[in-house]
Length: 622
Image 1 (cartoon, helix red, strand yellow):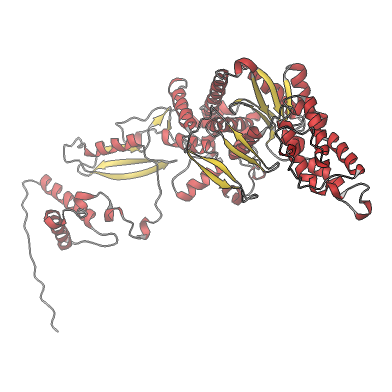
Image 2 (cartoon, rainbow, N blue to C red; image 1 turned 180 degrees about the horizontal axis):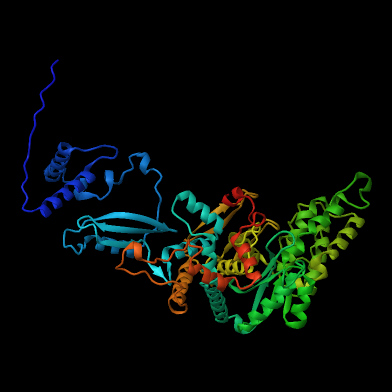
């Protein structure tokens, strides 16, 4: 088969001047670049075909509703769809502010000083943390250049980098986890020294601390507006939390309002201030309660777990009522009952009695009922506790008048007590419980559920497997305080220890709810408890802290670095570089931050450079 003869078509274009010719060639090459598919070469014939196809598609009536041609519809190659090109698979990312993006769009439309059509090409790209910095050059004269950064500068540092540090800090993420995440996503990252400079030198820690103090002061003012406050004052809840399971370096005691469950005070004591972790709760309590009183809150009662030293401080020095937590008072009841309800066969009816075998759990429930219905008096509580033995003997004369056992048709499901030795041992065991011995501290039936819940939330910001420096520890603790404000709310709680439902009515709850749903109890499938469907959290404290930080950077601090000029080229501009470690700016920060060896020690602790402090990498990423 003979080859087909190729036909040549020669076009001649005449220009008025060399400048017009060069301008046309530039535009033609630009069109060739835009229309060339990835991985292919486009000759002059292919370029003309692509141009004609674009014109035909744009003018065809039947295709007006479909996707427009690339030249008129999208600035992205392949209409923004990833085509699997290996050269574009692993591209780095950077963060862009909306304001700087608008500036970029306007700047690309402005013509060069040579007064030709605006056509700027990317000369170089540099990434500083999460910020991209681009040098544009005029394609016509090749002399004029313009610089664009994806972020503005706040007091010498890029806003985007500072906001990323603020974001991962408020989210409770560790600096090492943030750096690994950013490296894996190839979106750039600021190093640990930059983070530490922002925390300490740029006073980010102080901004967080001040915002938390304002939050606790507002909580006190809200409590003062309650009707019951003018009559009875306010009762508060305290409990200690240690930063590790053994030889804790930091110990924290939060103070929550019993009426609103808002945090009104919090205090941390380190090992340098008090060496023994086991007795550190008293030292923290001596600091946090006077601080709450200094805010103008009248504290009438303090509830905490069983700590005799704290009790002495509350009753003798503060002259307040003292209450113990109900759960800590009953947690050993089952163990005490086990000694008299089960044992060896040879000791049957001597040290243990079969009639008490089914009363281990119900005794604990009965103690909870006694604390809730003793009318707030210690004598009535002791009488009701001793009446438990009479109840299981079938004598219900002293039982509560509204109790079902007062009905003539009542039949007790437990084994009736008839053995005199079992009755005597059972009564002695009830008298040995903490609730009976310290009835005056349990008669008001206070619990520390809410402060235990807050201590559990602290794990999100202060995990116990990580050792933090004192400044970072306090800052993260205050972030948890502000996060707690919009977290707590009313509802129904099912106590797994006593199988009772507590209805929590909180008139000052911060989060509203849309509806209620009834969820089955896993341990009791026949029971359903009401649960409120709360609205999503807004995390208003994050924006509040950022606004305060920006305000203090603008008005309270002198700029650490000079602002970036706008009209100079990239080669002559001294742009602040967070990654420079040998520059003048970093050395000035070092003189300010590292005045003594103690500050350097806190630097190592905060940045987590010690493997013993941080643990394994897999554990952190998990």
